[in-house]
Every structure is written in structure tokens, then in C-alpha cells.
Image (cartoon, rainbow, N blue to C red; front, top):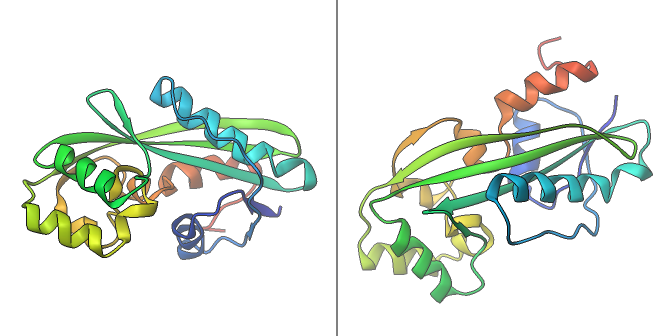
Length: 188
């Protein structure tokens, strides 16, 4: 079965490649929400991404995903500026936050499965210098919560409870289990 990744995220594509899956990237004109309960929002955005593409590939399995960072019940999306990235990183400094990724799997125009995976991430205390220098790299500007655990932002992480890949953007262990229901298994 062909797999379609309905995402513009190079990190999600890299994860699928890393685990040997054959797929095609087709990002559609999905409308992403930005308010609501975090879990519902993550799933809703994932579904929106998948269904914007899936009807064009009725024989394929389409994967949509959305990763959200939550601190004290507040969503931390992708920062719109360097100032906003610095503000987010200051808020995360020395604290635990939640990263949740909603995933939708579609067959044709039918949503076949959805799920959410949670990971708790604790940042160590960050200095003003570290925050400014990190923001100047540009790395945090296209990432929810203003950091990438797989890059320099990983140096801020003191602890993680849950799936590392979820924080990168796609909870691969859970996704690979879900794919088996569609006859896709990396171990066969």
C-alpha cells in the first residue's frame, strides 16, 4: 500500500525514511486551528492535513500529524518572531512542559484512525545568553515551542518522559504499530 505523508515538515519525512518506509510527500491546503483543548486541536489539525490530500489518493494510506507544545495549559505554537521565540524559551526555562502529537490515518477520504501521544519534557535553567544565541541560529523559528530537540535545542533538555520521536514531530513506535493494521510492517 502506498503511503502519503501530508506534511511539509522535513523532520517527519526524515523519521519515515529513518525507519525504512517508502512514502511520498504531498502537502495540501489544510486549515490549522490555533485555539481549543490541546488534544482535540492536535487531532483536528492532523485530520485537516490528511483529508486535504487523501481523496486524491484513494488507494493510499495518508498520514497527517500535528505537534503541539503546552505549558501551564497554554499552547506554544511556532514563534512569529525572534522576540516571541525568546519569550517562549524563557517561559520553558527550568520547567516541565507537554508535547503532544495528534496523528490521523486516512484511506481515501475516510479517516480510519486517530491517536495522540504525549511526552513530558523538562528544560534545565537557561541563561539569557544561551536563549539569545540559540534564537540567532534561526532554528527555533519554525518549531512549536521554539526549539528542536533533534538540534541545538536538545542541549536545553534535562529530562524526557515518553517518546523522543514524538517531540521531533512523529511518534514512530506508536505509528509503526498502527500501520500494521493496514498491512505495513517495517520488520517484514
